[in-house]
Image (cartoon, rainbow, N blue to C red; front, side, top):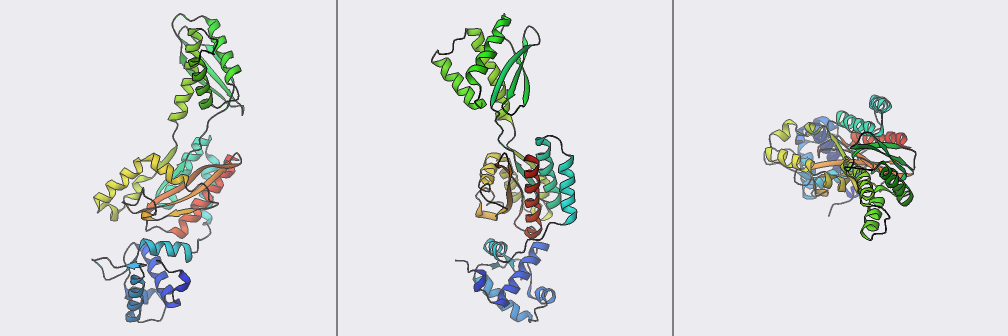
Length: 345
């Protein structure tokens, strides 16, 4: 069982902090001579080695076979992040870059893609954004003829949004059927989300309660189907900067690289992981095998929810190696989430 940070002696805490901060900065195991040089602890290398041995026995440090130095274990990183790390204020230049990029973004989808790219660039990790599930509530539906075999299906949402889609028309269609189908959709399905409207339509047609002829029924199905397909095809996750994860250290381990790229392809599993960050007020940090998805590649995830319409609508974050600058990246992710929340309000 990991000891609370308060149970470590002040000497052990000082040595542990130097090892972790040096490792996060360089990615290399840290030796006793390096610590005595860097830390100003006024301890001999022999004393430092003894403290490091104690920390290793507690499961907080490990010694790679190829080095006499030590590096933090996953348990040690968690103890450091939760008990010792002082998250810095976001740097003014990072704040300015995020605000400028978000201000220049157009529609919501562009702002979300910009946020993902911005996070990737600032953190040198992969930036991820979970897109809000947007399912418009139908207020009015109409068909506008374009030609003998095509019409424009126009959906007006309860929020005033208007979307158009081209639908193919059945052969030999009577133009009156367009109005009949549109009136039926508006009258019977208005006030429902697209998913609810689709299910009610299927139930009524199956029970033959829909007072429509075969042609109008076909139009109703086509009209709703075009939006259902679009809605399900909308991306639920935007990932940018995957190449940042293949650093020289990772490239030397091809199995780890393959594993990481496979994990990034599993969008559904990433979304499930990010869903677990929705409940928090700020950033949530998953280190290595603490999340099943990235346990094999040994990656970490920092994620924070962003809000809109009175509640949490998505999650933004980064995926990187366990050796990343948590103190700098956490405030970047947190500020990006706050900025997106202001845009979505």
